[in-house]
Image (cartoon, rainbow, N blue to C red):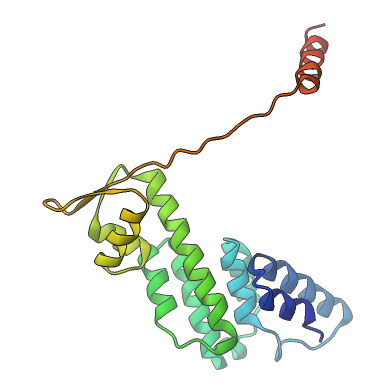
Length: 197
């Protein structure tokens, strides 16, 4: 089986492509009737789905893996533990599952990239869901100790009340510019005119 596209994606750190590449290679192997289960990079495939936040596809992949492979590959079980925590939305548990295994060299870089991405996702979640949050809860969501979490959010412009140990969320303003040229306005006018008549 030729894993060149997967190797190239990993080498170029195009982690968002890994799930699609693995899915396509898996379909190709199945179509050819090739025996692939013993050499398939299931851990990378699962992590690829986690990276693009496709937990459903990861679950279906997990269900399709032969049980003898699940039982014999400890790293695969550790990767699935991350998936279980993602599925149950155990935000702190995801970070614990990531740190709770000594990942192999080839997987370690992808796990680190996912961990960093997941921390950013959790920060965006906190940003959209909270106006104030305790340092302890922020640290749990971000997978950091309290000092690191406090420094992380303070760098993002949040405020800290040391007396209550609460963080005040500062929404980041995003400036979006709409470019409306005359041709777009003309097409919109014609469309509305057409609908009215």
